[in-house]
Structure formats: C-alpha cells, structure tokens
Image (cartoon, rainbow, N blue to C red; front, side, top):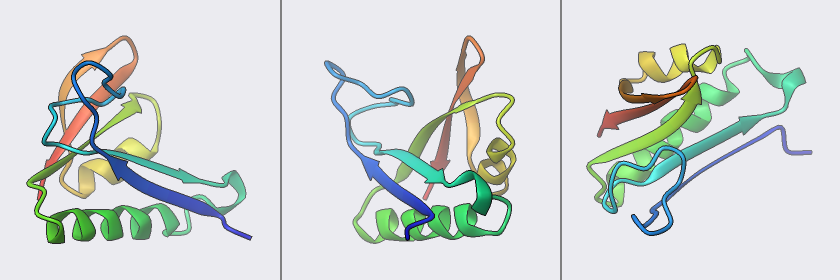
Length: 96
C-alpha cells in the first residue's frame, strides 16, 4: 500500500493554490501517512520532486505549510525559505 505521495502543479493567478507565487512556479504538495512519518519518506519525495522539476526546466518550487508543522524544518533544510505569511501558514519558495 502507498504510504505517501508528492506532486507539483502550476496554478493561474485566477485560480491560485495556497502557496501560489506566480504562474511560472509550480506549487508542491507532499503527504505521508502518519505511521510512516519521520522515516525519511517525505525527504525522499521532496528531493525527487525537486530534481524532476529542475529537469523539466522549472526555476523554483513553492509550497504552503502551517508554521507549527514539523515538516517545515525539512523544507528549510532543502532550501525553502519563507516569502510570506498568512495567518498561521507560510508560503515558502526554493530556487532550483
């Protein structure tokens, strides 16, 4: 059974995602089943998406994460940095 999934998608300014930056920056989504967290699965999914996006010619990836979410530290270690904050959620960006 799958324990996690990751993808990125380009949104438009008319229909933006939660971590929307612009129409040239895909927004990343990652999910890992609770019982399988803290085992490196999220990191592997993140790294894979970053490599794939770079190979497809994208210059950056964005995401939205709750400020209290422990995965935020994983994103920061991978090069994501906060570019805005709305309520308790951060929009983060990583240059590829």
